[in-house]
Image (cartoon, rainbow, N blue to C red; front, top):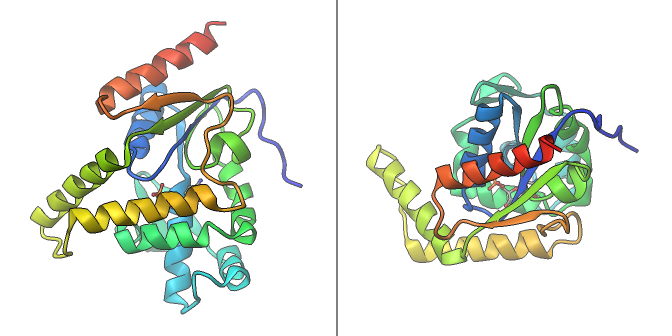
Amino acid sequence: MHNATPASIPVIAIDGPSASGKGTVAELVAAKLGFHYLDSGALYRIVALAAKQQNIAWDDALAVAECAKTLAIEFKNSQVFLNGVDISEAIRTEEMGKGASRVAVHATVREVLVDLQHSFCKTPGLVADGRDMGTVIFPNAPLKIFLTAATEVRAQRRYLQLINKKAAGDDTQVSYADILQDLQERDARDQGRASAPLIKAEDAILLETDNLGISQAVEYILQNYQLITNF
Ligand code: DC
């Protein structure tokens, strides 16, 4: 079906629910090791945005998959381009987070994105962040982390992020209750779908960050990576 990724290239798979902090942690781990970084959630967000721009309903599996096939996606430094247009900000909204979770339910859509995700696996290594990195996309990753925190802790973190954005001039209304409800819905959809649901891989290390700072989580992952490379 798909080319397997080369076993000689190390992959650190970091999966977990929304707002667990895994994006920040994964980026820092990649920077420390000089590895490439895959933000797989961004791909689903891009598909949701493109579908919306083309008036395609997120629930229309076939139409969304067809749309996904035509996209020219480019990552340059920390910016994302869709068909040459910088959409880095446009995909970061709460609406596109929800849209991403909706389009990600479809097996047909997930299938379209597999090769693109594998193409990030290049020397000297990759840190891949998402929901199914350790279970489906990079099942042979030598290090898998399942990073999570209580829903209320994640909602509080997301709330503070949005408040800070608002202070910086974003005029979107922010309510903790709405954020909590959104997260609960998103978790339920990501965990409950039939295709590549959010689940801890059997061989993944559980990392609960309720009482753990970003740098401690990064350090923990780096230590675990060192353990397996010194084997
Ligand atoms: O990580 P994120 O919040 O940017 O992801 C947005 C949505 O995309 C998430 O709610 C579910 C989906 N997603 C997925 O199904 N599989 C992935 N590997 C990454 C994200």
